[in-house]
Length: 113
Image 1 (spheres, one colour):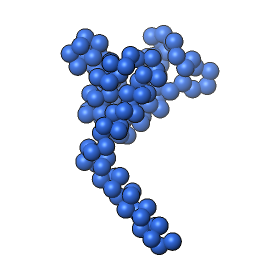
Image 2 (cartoon, helix red, strand yellow):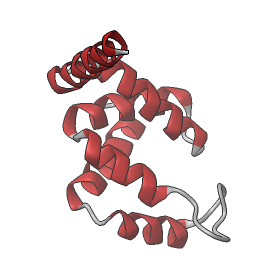
Image 3 (spheres, one colour):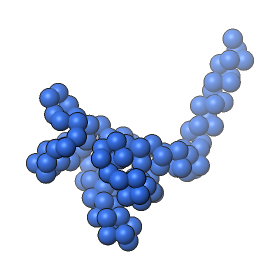
């Protein structure tokens, strides 16, 4: 039992170290890209946006962004308009995260991201 606890602690420390040093950024970028594609953004644009977002935001900010943009209650999962988008962006309550998301979307759409 003691070896199991030590092993789990070692895995946790290594995982935290990988996240802290940026070694896990490719895995995080894959998760962000997947979430963007699920929301209806094209594969190429999602990859561009994910790289920019992972470089500029913390894991906490990425989590807040994901939680804030998720559909709640009777909100539509996809195919919503500008009004719904603005409502969800306000719900994020992190100006920097919203700014990075919107600038990444714009720059990647223009092909200069």
